[in-house]
Amino acid sequence: MIEENATVVSIHLVANESAKNKVTVESEIKSSCSGCKQVDNCGSGQVAKAFPQPKLSLDLETDLPVKVGDTVVLGLSDKHLLLSAWQVYLWPLLGLVVASVFGQWFVENKIFSHELFAITLGVLGGYLGFCLARYQQKRGKYCKLLIPRILRIKNTAINIVEITEYTQAP
Image (cartoon, rainbow, N blue to C red; front, side, top):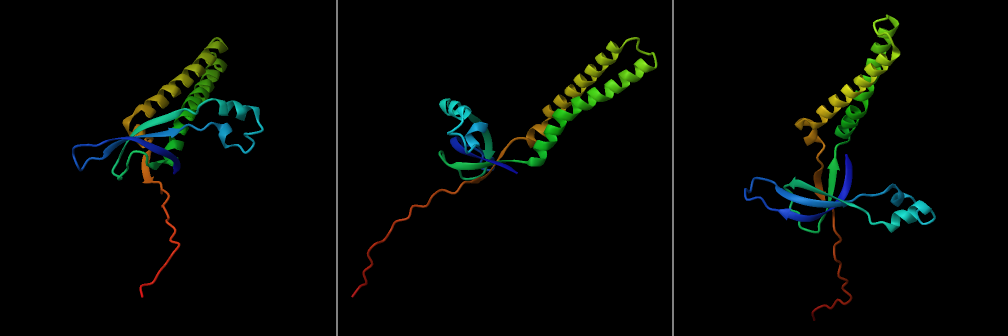
């Protein structure tokens, strides 16, 4: 599970008590320069510090008792993210390779008169793979799997009051 901290910025209560509340959370988008230990000694790190970090805002549903200002932990399934990445990268690549193999076979067997037709068939196969990946990503089944969930409310500090004097009753 991939986890990220976010801050609750607004709550939209739903009238139906069995329904989940709609919550708007905001998370900072981290640049790669902010995580390096050499950020103070690097020119890119100095430039990254000069610009404000953009914030990502999401509207999510939850049944947790959150309040505005709470820090919550968002979670996204590794499995579903990898499945999505597999579809986006490999379908166009497979389409390109398979169509190119067929195009080359057509050229060798004199079905196509020129290699330009084989290259065109390969590009068309890649485009069809892209269309297949886009179709699969837009289907409701996969879209719902890639919506982050609020896993828990992050623990907050507990105020500790020091007692310095203890007296016993006589």
